Image (tube, rainbow, N blue to C red; front, side, top):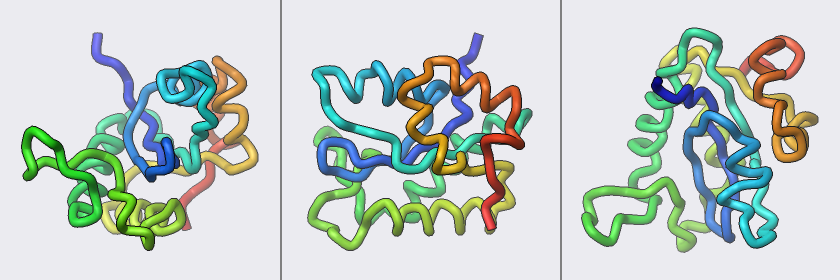
Length: 146
């Protein structure tokens, strides 16, 4: 069975800005690989696909890589390949800048993606069932991108 990766996130991870997709933000930012060892990594902004549009986050990830290509860290094995991390030497690229790029791409490409209301961001890390709550009641937790 294929994993549902219906969330796209922006975060600051070990002092580098990062974006990516996931199926469970709690696993990624709560008890997760990103916070193993007590690091204070938190999700900055989180987006969800509308139900039935799970491919839109994968497409968005590709669009963001293309848009930010010149600012991303290169793979050591293949310099033509980029990672999801902004190179720290590009200090003008931060969460706010990335949010603008992401939301412009969502609108331009008419992607069926909404943003998690910022008041609920702490719940992503604290409540392991929060992602399912969002999926069950998206109107309560998500907002349109204006």
